[in-house]
Image (cartoon, rainbow, N blue to C red; front, top):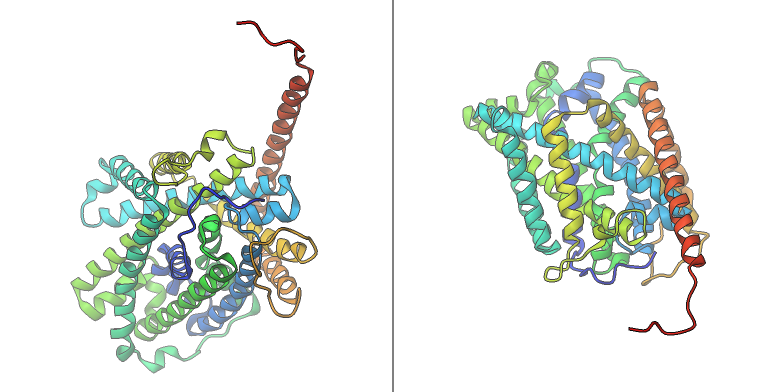
Amino acid sequence: MEPAKDLKRTIGVFGLACAVVNMTIGTGIFVLPALVAEHLGAAALICYFICGLLIFLIALCFAETGSKVTGNGGTYAYIETAFGPFAGFLANNIFWISCCLSDAAVANGLSKTLGYFYPPLDAAFRPLLFLLLFSGLAFINIRGAKNGVKFMVISTLAKLIPLLLIIGFGISQISVENLAWTSSFTLGDISSATLILFFAFLGIENAVTNSGEFKNPSRVVPLGILAGISVVLVLYVSIQVVTQGILGSQLTSFKDAPLAEVSRRLFAYTGIVLITIGAAISMVGSISGAILAIPRVFFAGARDGIFPKFLGNVHSKYATPHSAIIVYAMIGCFFAVFGAFKQLIILSTASVLLIYLGVVLATIRLRFKNIPLAGKPFLIPGGIIVPVIAVAAIAWLLSGISRQEVVAIVTALGILSLVYILIKLITGKQQRLALKVPISDHPVKP
C-alpha cells in the first residue's frame, strides 16, 4: 500500500504517545481496581504485570509492522499489506464497527456521569448532548490533525490530573495490612482477571490509524507506542496499589465507582466532583481520539476501492479526510442516541483480539515479504520469537471468550465475507462491461 501522500505528516513521538495514553485510559480505569480485585484480591498486581507483559509483546509487533507499512489506515493497512485485500476488507470493517459502537457506549457513559449533577442531560437533553459532542469533536478534527492532537494532549493531561492527585495524596493513606495476600486463587482466576485487564489496555489499534501522518514512522511508531504503554502500566499499577491499600476488603463493595470512594475519603465532597470531572474528560478525550483516528480507516478503504469514493476526499484547506470524519461522527451519534447495542458491543471488544492477532501474524509475514520501505524499519530483537509468543498469548485470551461471542464473531465474519464476494462480482461485471464498449476510430463530430 502506498503512503497517503496528500495528508500532512505532523504527528511525532509525543503526539503518538499521548494518543496511546488517551485512547487506552478510558472509562475502565474508574472501575478497574474493583473488577480485578474481585478475582484476586490484593494479589491483583500479579495480573497487572502479566497483562503488561502481554501488551508489550503485542505493542512490539505493532511497532515493527507500523515502521514498515507507512500508508494511512493503521491496522487495516498492516493486515492488507501482509495478507491481501480480502483480509484487509475484513479487518477494516470489523475494526471500525467495533470502534464506533464502543464510542457510542462511552457517550452513553458520559451522559450518565454528567446526569449525576444535572439529570436532564441523561434524559430529555440526551440527544442534544450527543449531537453537540460528536459535531463539536468532528469540527475540531476537520480543522487539522494538529488541532486534533492538541485537543487530545490537553484532554489527556486534564484527565490524568485527578488520577495523579489520588496517587500522590493516597500513598500516605495506604494501610500495609490491606496489601497482604489473604485469599487463595487459581490459574483460572488469573486468566479471568487478565482478560478484564487486557480490555483495559486496548487502544494501540486506534492510535496508529493516523500512520500516514507520522513524521518518521520508523522512529515515531516504536517510541510512541512503547512510551505510551509504559505510562499506562505505571499508572494502572499505582492506582491499584492506592485503591487496594485504602479500601482493603471493602474494595469490592464499591464496584461501580471505587475511585470515587477513594476520592471521597481523601478530599470529601470535592473529591467526588474531581473524579467525576476526570471521568467526563476521559470519556470526551476517548471519543475525540477515535474521531481523530478511525476516519482514516474509511479514508484508506475509500482510496483502495472498498468504501465509497467520497470518503477519500481531502479538505482543500485543512488537508484532512473531512468526509470520512463527518460520516464516522454521524454513525457514532446515531448509535449513541438509539441504544446501547449490548450484544454488538460484546462483539466489538472480542473482535479487537482478532485485529491484534492479524497484526501479529502480519509481523511474521512481512519478515518474509519484500515491500517498499520509506526508511530503515524497526525490528524486534530475537527474530520471530516475540510474535510467536504474542500469538500464543492472544490464543490464551481468546479461550476465555464465551460461546455466544464466538457465534457472533463467526456470523459477522460470514456476513462480511459475503459482502466482499458481492462487491467483487459487481466490480468485476462493471469492468467486463467497460471492456466491451466499442471505441470509435473516428472523432465524434460536434
